[in-house]
Image 1: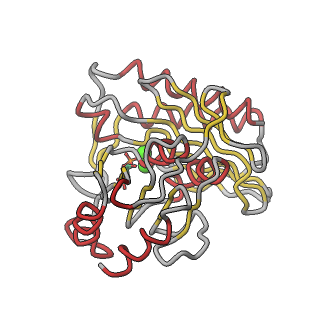
Image 2: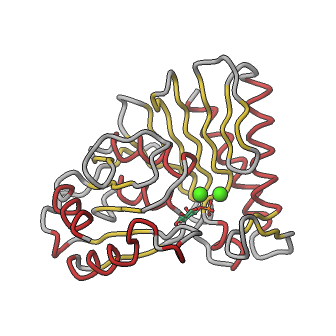
Length: 255
Ligand code: IPD
Ligand code: CA
Ligand code: CA
């Protein structure tokens, strides 16, 4: 099945790439910050059509069309375009993220970094890969030398989980903190050791599913802010190389 997931993630990515920098329709979701474009919708349509044709009995949870639950043990968790704001404004950092659960356990995850044409994939127990080359998390153990990434949710004005305070504290502690705008790509960069850690205060299942498995299969750790195991429905997420995890938790807990 991993080959099917890779195939449909790339196919959906090609649809999105075709719209990049061109004309496409844009609508608002919850408010003017939260966009959905024609590319999000067409990507999701292509992915869902593929699943329905090849795996008609499987359940689907997709960002734009919601849940199509079936009696199946399989659940596809889909972000058809992660980084919509970047895409809509012409910043080439966005991805397609597809995770697969079996009996509520994530068994496969694929993130396609569309403009860099990089395909990240992982199967439970088999390691994490970028374009079929094995990747692993960084070995950095010193928070002052750490290169971190975060993101902000659409409801940031409510400052959920003291997001601003946490951002300030991490920025003071780390070498640098970046904000890329695609949570799925943030996870990939932790998995391949570019970033030592990633946290975000309010994510959705489709932001988390593939990326969590990628980081874990690359040797890293993914928990909530107090170090507890998470499932895809957890909002707060901390992913790291595992070595600086405790230190990141103490900063997140104090702020
Ligand atoms: C968003 C991106 C962003 C993160 C937001 C997400 P979307 O997803 O992953 O990096 O900070 O929390 O909602 O809306 O572009 O699919
Ligand atoms: Ca997303
Ligand atoms: Ca999205």
